[in-house]
Length: 82
Image (cartoon, rainbow, N blue to C red):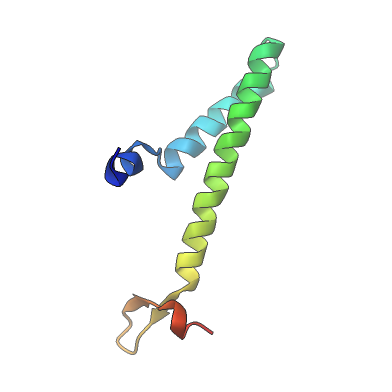
């Protein structure tokens, strides 16, 4: 599988968060059979990790942005970071 195909099959942050919110809602209702609740919980933990990792990557990118004198943003090279 090419890297581009693999990348396009990864759900967006928004899709992952929406699915996680749906799982939380179902679990909060309290009428989910135990086996289903455990499966949903495990899926929710996985989605939570995916969301946290995506947010961490975005945070690192934002920390590496620099504004030049004209007000344009550019990404700092790792060698120039302090």
